[in-house]
Length: 225
Image 1: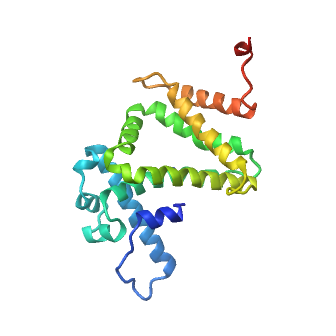
Image 2: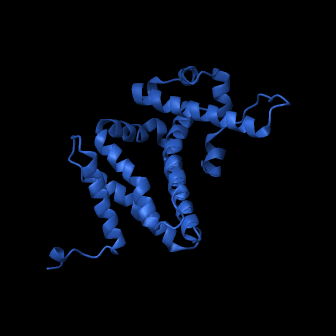
Image 3: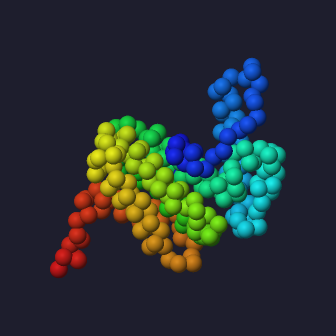
């Protein structure tokens, strides 16, 4: 779902607790990353359970087993922590894309990485709707645009890295990323509303979308008549 640097500047705070002199820098950074991750996960879990309006920073800190002061060393608000929880999930997919075999065609890599999203959305329709509703909630409005922008940018950079293209000037990584994300949205859109769909059906829809992308989006013969 590898956090972008701009996101760190916008959505993170600084830890003001001095680390022990004997503690290696790498260990300190890992502990800070783990604490940040735990707080983001707690914010997401509690917000899904209660609604973001009913969650407090103290609740998040308690769930993550840290003090409220520690929470505020990382985030200035519960909404920032919630956005970080979403970002961690999305960054996971970017990491998976970067870890795919180097010689694998990029559309195949994207399909392999994104297919579980479609399958999960089908198998856990109610949970997916809850995530989407939370992402669209007024409380997250100030962070939503940045979250989406950074996620798309991270995917573009990953595609560019995998294909040897320049994400700043080349059309290819931008177009492929946008098309792949659109394929997931189309596959989700084709699911019958209000029903739990077998995950294989969702995967089939996404596979059809990617097959059309590989074929250059040729118009189906029946539609040409």
